[in-house]
Picture (cartoon, rainbow, N blue to C red):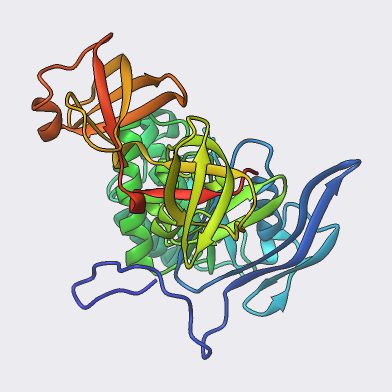
Length: 379
């Protein structure tokens, strides 16, 4: 992560040769009986970045996080922190703290006592004055100054989330691990906490590693994202890279929303591909994921790349509106094209206002530009 002079976070850039990763997974695998949770995973996480494991339930992302924390030991491979192999090291000996999905706060302790708990387990134990100073500083960081004597059950969900963060950062870890920490919050509070997490990570400069199945959360928070499938990382990249240049249909489908049209007879010219869809027409798009000439594949078009209108234009597709949902800043249309099936379209409010309330059962025409489409392997 790079930070400008005014404190704004810029796009993530990989660490240079002079830098070393703060954490690594080298050929890591983890099995539980006959179940392979993680298979031969390789990953380097840079100092100060916000990295996210993104994938569906059961894909192995939480197991990878727990191996970084020390709660699971790799069946094969090595876990390194600051260049040291910690694969067999106990969790409490690692410079790592973890925020759990249910926060794991002690209900019988006050806010201050919860935050101080980890400090009191250190050997040698810090003095009382130092503990109080660190707790006060942690509370100030998460905007809870003055809440030291509150009971946990007196705190709202968002406040409990911040207490859990304060308890994690008070030990000044090299890695802060977050296991779906916002899952229990409502949508509005989740949005607020996403901003707070970003600000906190930027201010502290600690490396954050997040696990989530929420693509919007991953896109909005992360410097880099590792998309996990069946225990393997299938693509790592900055959010915009994964959204605009997915390596496969799976990534395009999981990172954002897309329409997929089956096709055949791919032809490649430079980084442009053409493909024949089921309506018999040939379409162009950007070639992705190493697809080769002669292969079958699919055309992927994001809903916001499609223009919808009442008038026929050259190369436009005629369709019927099945549903229209007004969502404030844009309108979502679900339309049916006789050869290609259902298609989702997002129309900005300004352009939608010119459609004169295009509604269910109306005929419409769709069009997209070649550079707004991708030709992908069907994985």
